[in-house]
Image 1 (cartoon, rainbow, N blue to C red):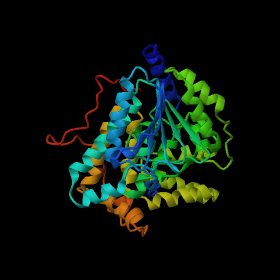
Image 2 (cartoon, rainbow, N blue to C red):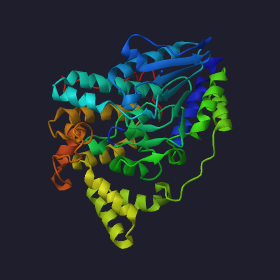
Image 3 (cartoon, rainbow, N blue to C red):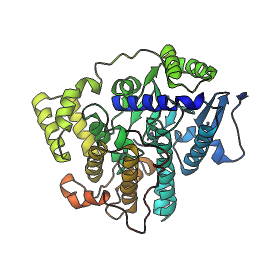
Image 4 (cartoon, helix red, strand yellow):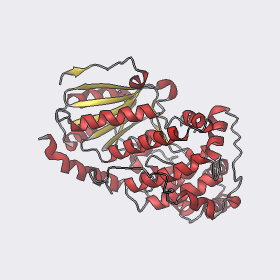
Length: 406
């Protein structure tokens, strides 16, 4: 019976998706599985009968994802998908974060030591897991309590259900470390209402849990004190039917009340400013709006853009625009090519410089190269989107056996 509802799951997921800085950048009841191996301890497992919970367990690092975590998650999820006794899967984080993103400090040190193959392995592992989540054949429930940024959003948003709370903070702050929103971000950001995706990608601004539900990044909302009850009720279910899970989430979740100060109340002016073809035109539109209205939002948004890497801004804008017409696998494959260019230092060393300034030395004074938008040439941006050389393999995703959702 469990396998018979796969088609319903696919339809439900498709419908959901279509309607859709810094460092903050685990048959009977099974207790948490603690292992001697620290790598395994980074992802714990709980479960009772019909479901399993993967618990991201690096709370001191805000559950930042490293290669071993990505590999363990991939192995666990594949085994659970193949197990006919397991109907659905959940994910949550330990401590005050779901996941703050990838372990950028580890990547920074690997790049500076010249260990590029290890860096590539990290991105291949994480991007492949994002694709697994986006094509998973069983319902997936991500409990997004706390910080959910960058790669943390990437390993949750493509799934069936995403439960945000009053403590959830979402962002894609990569432009502030000289990078681009990745791990599928160019797919899900580009499908947000209007030009909200461009705004989030270029400013790195945060959304709270209510805003995530309102714009479609999350499917359900809960106050943090009710989250244990939701988890308990889900754990009692014996099902693989997404509609049954959804009923439980709706029954025990909370109503969303939009804040008047939310960016989602400013979509008209946001769209007017961020609809333009180039970053320079977006900046000009914001400056005009700021001078005419003296709107504090326009001024703060301009300041956010001026803090970011100019090269990252242009690369990220093009990435979101291309993502709007691509499937998840196409976005991930393109992001992988962009990422290899970004960490190679052949065009710019902005990624390492951004991580140094914000996370390592914490002087918050990155020296971007190029330093201004005007000095970022079209050729520089184009190079991020070129095919890899014949000696550099592309990201391999199992698209022939796992259909990408539109």
